[in-house]
Amino acid sequence: MANEKAYHKAAIYCRVASPGPMTRELLDAQRQRLERYAAKHHIEIVGTYEDSGYPGNTLDRPGMQALMREAAHKTFDTVLVVSRDRLFRAPGPSAIPKELRTPPFKIQAINELTRER
Image (cartoon, rainbow, N blue to C red; front, side):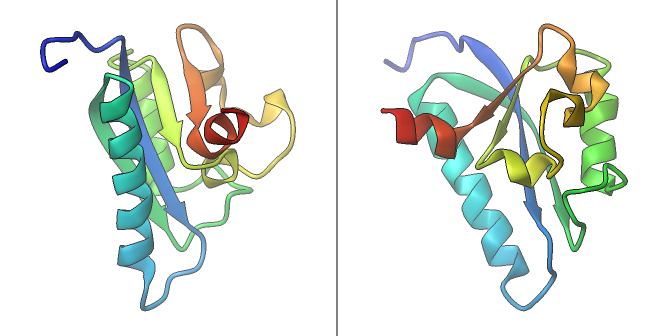
């Protein structure tokens, strides 16, 4: 299994809206879940981006801005998040930033995927 090639290259995005004493632990827990998922599914992680203290209804977040800048270089084809609301809160496909809406990008929310299995 160690010789299996990664099928996708992914960026991990984690967000905690309210900063507090547990912020680092919450961000680490999200990242670790996403890393385990990626390893299990042979997804290569090429970057990790995070924000704390920023609401999901705005894209004006340092980690999100860095993710979108890197998306322009197409170094990854998948964004892994625990749930879509970590990435953005607005409903519908138009809420997805245009940088992440055009192929080859896809967003994988692992909570949604694990519920289906």
